[in-house]
Amino acid sequence: MTSVAEPRASSEASVARRERVRLLLRSPSFLVGAGVILFWVLCAILGDRITPFDPRFDQTEDLSAPPSWEHFFGTDRLGRDVFSRVLAGSRDILLIAPAAALLATIFGTALGLITGYLRGIADDTISRLIDAVLAIPLIFFALTVVAALGSRSTYSVALVIALAFSPIIARTVRAAVLGEAQLDYVEAARLRGERASYVMFSEVLPNVMPPILVEATIRLGYAIFAVATLTFIGFGLQPPSPDWAVQITDNYPYLAEEWWTVLFPALAIASLVVAVNLVSDSVQEVLER
Amino acid sequence: MARYVAKRLGLALITLVLLSVIVFAAAQLLPGDLGRSVLGREVSDEAVAEYNREHGLDRPIVVQYLDWASGAVRGDLGNSLVPPEEPVWIVLRPALVNSLKLALYAFVLVVPFGILGGVIAGLNAGRLGDRAITIFGLPLAVIPDFITGLVLILVFAIWLGWLPVTAQWDEGAGPLTQVKYLTLPALALAIVLFGYIARITRAGVIEALDADYTRTAYLKGLPEGTVIRRHVLRNALLPTIAVIATQVGYLLGGLLAIELMFNYRGIGLTVIEAATLKDYNMLAAGVLVIGFAYVLVTLVADILFALLNPRIRYEAIE
Image (cartoon, rainbow over all chains, first blue to last red; front, side):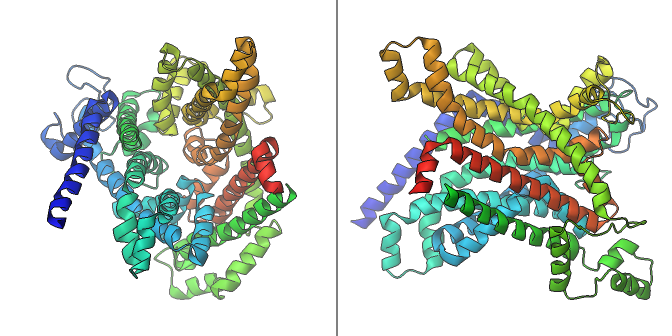
């Protein structure tokens, strides 16, 4: 009997999944967002191979030239082609932000499962700590930790942002787990004598995946926001990375004379953040209907 | 009600204590050897040990924390680590006043417009006005504030020349001049919240429009204006106000990039400079002050909300 029942259950799940994918593909905001993200991912992968000039070193004769047919976005004061730098500038942020969001989701989910399922003193202690961390605005927290660590490597920036995000995710997961822990299947597992870790990760976790997924996509948008802001105030990515926020920081003092060296990278960041949010909004809509 | 307030106060106190532990751990312990970190790699071990002894850094960690925290309670946040090592409060107090000015101005700018936008969108849900506000609201809410600030500076300060590029006014400038200098940074700081507030308000209005009491009000023949004013808006705005208060954190977080961008002497700029100079005492004090402000604002908002909301008022009495 079980051999018949099992495939049917899994095919029902896959029908539901296919239905969700179909709904996503019909949503215009998802398509626009995904298209823009795909464009920047391609730029990040292809990098120097598609840029018309070398984004890092090419010293042309035209220093600080305004946009023209030869240099669509002009050149900066070292003669580097801004258009090439904007195309190449997506790489670092597209590595760090997803890494930070993923790590934060893993930490936060573990914390949320523990606090929501075990309750009691562990919950009280961790929840109070989470409240306290959340009282410090995220960028202030990240800045303090990065400055204290004294290292501004790509890894430490990703790790610090993951650390700063995990309390928020933990709170969302905790709320979902609280609702789930009341249900019969959890009680049944408990009565069977399963270990708490088994019930948490094998029984409860699969059932709270939708809010975790939504939270992860929302965090990705905020991670880009946070990395860019941290870089702008000098505690994120560092030159010679052609990262967009690094370009903005470098050229900001000359904004009045050479606006093109600042405006185009700024628009690139804006396009990526908006695209990620369009995607996370549509994912949220589809998963929560 | 008194019990609710007492409970809320107790929680806020616990949060503050934990906050101070976290800030101390991050800014005083994480750097490892503080003396080495401040003096640099070239200085001899003896000099580092001497520095640590002078600044009480060779004492046990718990003693250091208690000393620091009890000082903070008395309003003494220690001295700067950077010569001339003056008390951090001398620098922080005027910075705090400046940041409060900016944040308050931003709040005053965005709250009425956000609510107005949300009400218009909610009352016209699905129609053109709603679409326009929703479509423009999303990018405004998610684009980092320093990007918005850049575009604002470029357009209104550099190209049109209507407003100043920095927020540094001359000594002794009157309030009106200060408002003029603060308009661009306040706008940059506030725009992130516009979309958010509008979205929450819109949801509240749509929910209230759909409620039974609204239908009853229409059915008993009240004119539309009265229904919207007395039934829809009153019920829709309460949750909005509570949510807005939780967004103060975003506003405070935005101070870092915006104050740097406009070269404005507030807490944000002070904290960035402290982090750059490895002045960990100043850094810890600045972050602690910001966290304290956040806890205080959410506490006041929670209590106000409870006073206004009969449901919580009741629950608290039971």
